[in-house]
Amino acid sequence: MTTLLTPVFFHIVWCALLYALLTIARAPVVWGVGQRKDGSNPFGNIQSKISANLSNQFEWPLFFYIAIVLLIAMDEPIDSVQIYLAWVFVIGRVLHSIVQIFTDNIRLRGMVFTVNFVAVLAMWVLLVIEHI
Image (cartoon, rainbow, N blue to C red; front, side):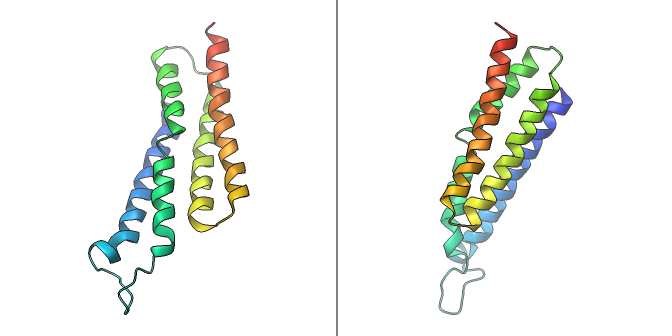
C-alpha cells in the first residue's frame, strides 16, 4: 500500500507547488510585490496558464484517485503494474504542467495528456479485469 501512496503523495506535492507558483505569479497584481516600473505584472504571460493547469489537476486525476482508493480499500496485494502506471501518471502530470505553462505547443501537450489518460485508463481496465 505505501508504495502506491508514494505517487499520490508526489502528485499532492506537485499541486501544492503549482499553488505556490500561482501565488508568486499573482503577487504583482494582488499585493503589488514585484511589479514592473510601469505597474505591469512580469508573470502576466504565464499566470493564466498556471491557473488553467492547476484546474487540470482536479479533472482527469479524479479518476486516478478513485482507482487508488479502490486498490487500497480492497486490501489485496497490489500488482506492480498498477504502481508503475501510477508513476507514469504522476510523471506525466508534471510534464503536462511544464508543457502547458512554459510553451504554446498544443500538440505536445496533447501527447503528454494522452500518456496520463492511458495510464489511468489502464489502471481501471486492470482493476476491473482482476475483480470481475
